[in-house]
Length: 338
View (tube, rainbow, N blue to C red):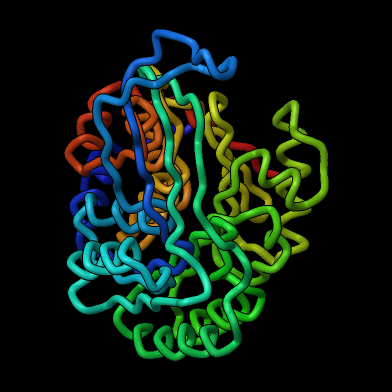
C-alpha cells in the first residue's frame, strides 16, 4: 500500500491557483425549485410540490468552469448558448469569470439549455430539460476552432466537458486534440458514451464505470479485474496514455502502461452526486498542471469528490476544504504493477 507525502500534496494545492485551464463544452443553467410535497394531486397520482424557493446556477461545462474558479485557477471558456435572455444572462455570468478569455456564441437555432430539478425535502421529484441537442453547424465549428487557436497560447490545459448537447462534434473533438498536442497543451476529457471512441489521442479521460463500459462495449464491471480489462481496451482503442475511472462508492482507479492504482472513496455522507464528475476532472486537471503525478492528482480529486457529494446541488469545493481533508488519515492506495 502506497503512502502519499502530505507536505508535497499541500505544496501542489498551493500551486493550483497558478494553473491556466480552458474549458470547452456544453453550457447550460441548472435550475432548482425546492419545497415540500405533503399531498397527492387530485388531478393525477402525482405529488404536489409547494414551492418555497428557486435559484439557478451555471451548469454542464460551466460547472467545470465554476469548480476551477473556486480553486482560484485562471480560466477560459469556449461554447454556445441560445440567442435568448437565458443565453445572454449566462454569457454575462461566465464572461465575468474569465478575464476576456471567453468565446460564447449565441445561436438562433436552439434555446439555451436549462435543466430544472424539482426537489422536496432534498429528494428530487422530477427533472425537466429544455434543450436542442443537435450538432452545431460547420460555420459554428469554424468559429469555435478559430477562437481555440487564438486562445491556446494562454493556457496549459484544456478540459473537454461533453454533455452531448451538440458542441463537441467529431470535427471539433479531433481538431481540438490535434491543436492541443501540437502546442504541448494537456487535454483532459470528461466523455459521453455517444462520442467515446472519438477521443483518440487525448492525454487523460475520466469516465465513470457506466460510461467506460458502455463506451467501449463491455459489460458493467463487477470486480477490479473487470475494470482492468475495460481500461486495457479503452487505452488500446483510443491510444490513451492515462485513464482515470470513477467508481462511485468503490472510489477511483487509475491506469497507465504496466501500472494500475485503486483508491477507496473518502465520502463521509452522500447527499447529492450531481456534478461530482465535474469536480473530479477540475481538481484532477488542475493538480496535474500544478505538478502532481497522476496518483497524487487522483487522491486530491477523490477528496474533492467526497466533499461535493456531501453538499446539495451542483456544488464546488475550495482548496481550504481539500487541505482540511488532508488532516484525516489517508485512504490506502493499492498499486498493481505488471
